Amino acid sequence: MVLLYPPPGAMIRFSKSVLDRYSSTMSKPINPIVLIPSRLASTRLPDKPLADINGTPMIVHCLRRAEEADLGPVVVACGDAEIASVIRDIGGQAAMTNPDHPSGSDRIYEALCQIDPDGKHDCIINVQGDLPTIDPAIIRAVFEPLADPDVDISTLVAEFADEEERTDPNITTAVIGYLPGATTGRALYFTRASMPMGYHHIGLYAFRRDALRRFVQLEPGVLEQREKLEQLRALENGMRIDAALVDTVPFGVDTPADLVKARELLA
Image (cartoon, rainbow, N blue to C red; front, side, top):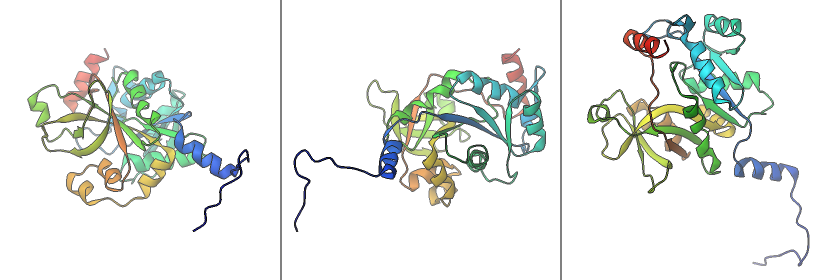
């Protein structure tokens, strides 16, 4: 085999497509967009996004918290016209999507393709629509792990508050090996089972645009179907998820009792 090298001092030229591809994979995203998937179908709290919290629908509270994070434009990906109407009435941005999407990831991807067909936004931050009291700083934290060019998806975790929380099957545990002093680490697994070295997973995500496109095209994996955890699909297909460690778990509204507490917190 003969290897040919350019002579000393020769200039090596790459095509624009090669340079663009290199740039997009080796730099932190610079133009994020926040998408909030929302639909009315909820068994434990009917019409949850429109639930009144001190005179304001819950989805509007979530929109305001996301806007306060000041990461980029915020759009609610709506599965129902009633939600879109509420958002537009207060001057917010809404995108109508197929009401039958199986997951929030599918919903935000459809919304992204509608509102940004030219691919200007290189990072998509997925904020849940049932976190009306979330600290905007927590939303900003989910963006940070993407500073590592090898990370496809980022998410958040916190320390468990107590042993009861650690063994609650309704709380997802993330298995992550943090180095001493580190606040970002690679996610190795997610489970509903109790794990001795696990962390409380918080379901906020930031996707590189290419990662989101790839993710929604993948078939559900074996582990995902067993655990009922969508993020395992990414791990099963070799995608890298890193998690930022934050101090608190944002309060989520799932039941009428949660709604009462949210009203108290935002009074």
